[in-house]
Image (cartoon, rainbow, N blue to C red; front, side, top):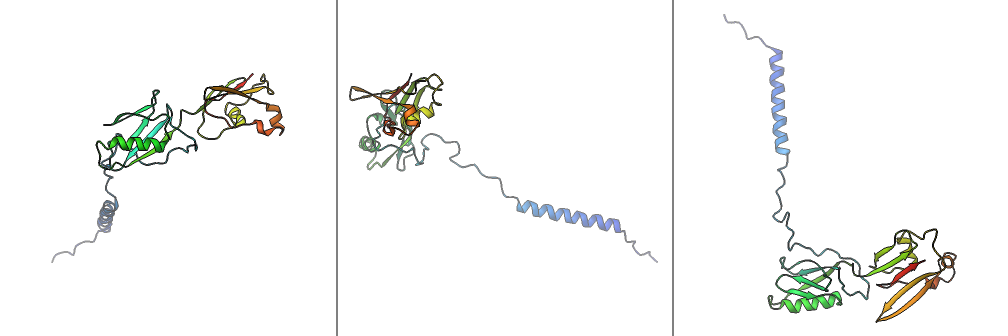
Length: 218
């Protein structure tokens, strides 16, 4: 007579544990998302500029040297891009070559480019975005912490420029600050009394600066 098989609890526990681990591994493998696939456009830089928001521009703004202009051609990635304005006032576009940009408003530049593009496209649609304004600058010299040039992308007063320059030094003549300006070939000068303005007197002397103004603190 054969003996009845002996029940071994340890073998049963090991087998059950193995089954649980195998099941858990299978579930984890199914839940793991596939690795991301690289985008076909990844790493592309030429012609890939998008219609992102440009800088805020003053109402009287015209393009100048050192500005950066975004030119967006509808459905034409090769022509689209950001173009710096050279010292000679021009930008260079694919196919179109050199285009004079300095002295034009963004809308006027758009018209010039669209007209030039008619040689290669039946109905070109162009959008101009001002990316950087570097041509409009004001200058401060003399007894300030950090003299030099500052961009004038928006309205800025004499007092604001002094603050941007780190303030006056202890040797500054606060009563005799001069703003020099040249417009249409004519030079003019304005006085700014820092002490008076700080006390709330003659507030009108804190004038709005224009491109090319030079503030001198003696």
